[in-house]
Image (tube, rainbow, N blue to C red; front, side, top):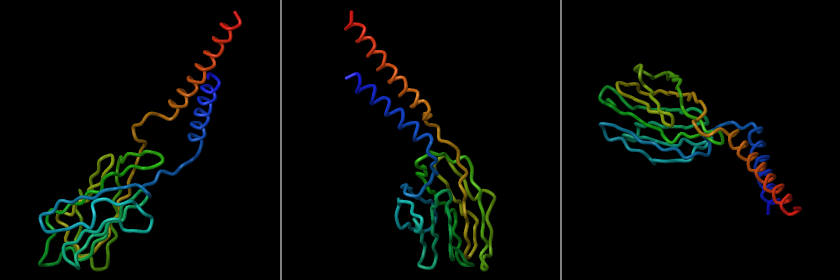
Length: 195
């Protein structure tokens, strides 16, 4: 029994060390994210959650057939593209879009900042305010208050840092401690049996 315990602890510790040594790129691809919005006008959303894919646009917000905002969540950025969300007769009002559930795998990450890039389209006629994007550790909100562009594209690059989780090294030390405990119990039983 003690041999099995010591062997299991040793294998667990070795596996933990291998995981620590293996480089892995944290990514949102394959993760489930959610979307919500707050608007004064009658916007709708195609779905409230989606699995992040490298090829698909996860969310589509519409106000009319020609007025739409598409959201493409990438491995570490979010692309918002909109067409005809406003014109001289239409204003989007206090529309804000929140993309949440942003947790990275295999290395957990938390959002610590955002970098917003606007790609002015040829027919762009308005502009963004200074506070277009806000964030928490796992969500980003795009605030379109005052935006009256006919069409445009915004990319929000997510600046991340390690999430506050127990360090993997602590798990490795725990495994080594179990291994040592198993060895100590084994020696104790041997000395008791020989006496």
